[in-house]
Length: 193
Image (cartoon, rainbow, N blue to C red):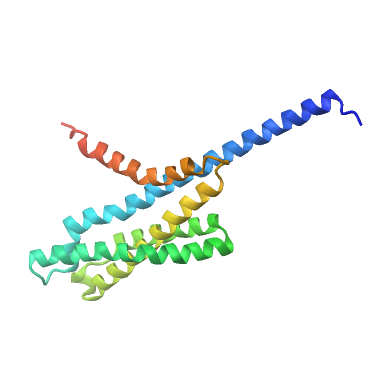
């Protein structure tokens, strides 16, 4: 059976259109991976600045100033212990219900925990409950970041074209570096007169 030239041309055009659409979808996934990681790490590390400057006196006022700072840094460190928990938890659900849904859940977990930390009453208002709530919310931030880190890397690599998986997996890690670059650029900006 002889195939007409016109059918071959139409098939080639359709294949090229599908390839362009696939590349555009992959680019969106890579960009979402980069931006999502940048936002999550910004939320994660802005806590470190607040812990160094504000949280010691706000949540641990009955201690010596050195102990206040150490206690605030301890709450910062809690999230590092929670990251593997988030990775296992969201990795499990990512395999079961899909990576996109779990990535949305990780962003919500981080966002809600960060918002609640911002609205958290201090020791003067809530007493001993305030540092405990701070620790629990910080743990939730760590869970959210751990799940996002692994999920974003996997979704970028799984949607990468053949032979380009390492390249596409690299972009998720660049979100953290881009966040560092943006913070450094803002910090170096001279104050207006």
